[in-house]
Length: 214
Image (tube, rainbow, N blue to C red):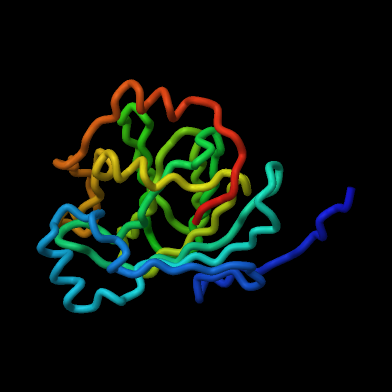
């Protein structure tokens, strides 16, 4: 058996990236169609600059094998669509019993989590705060501050991402919006469709390790 080579990389908090990363991907505002409740405000934002960066990820992925880890840095730009803060697409891990760790590096954010049954948790993120996302929880990051939100993360390399779980439910049960006092609050997602018992059971079925999908 040939062992993988150890490595060391650097988190550049000011630039919001991982130096020594093996991969990078970006999502632009136009890529987030359907994720915001105020469709008119989203359309106006697209006309004003749909090619604007929403968030970017740099990561080190030694392999996709079970037992290995992926780690990296997410950089999220600040902003709102209507009264809703900028967000990531959000996902459940394709192998749903895989957890994830996030650490706040700069800025202010919220880790929005939802159980398969529709329970919501919203955890405030700030520099030095470590968030544990347990197995089976859907999660998305939200930038609730006026500055760039930078977070590092680590998760099992075979976990993968299931984005369709949010598409079928028309998003998460709650949205993160402004509260008119410079903070944030949770608002009900009027378009939300609760999962059926069959859909919930499918999430808890054992999955086979596969290739991660960013």
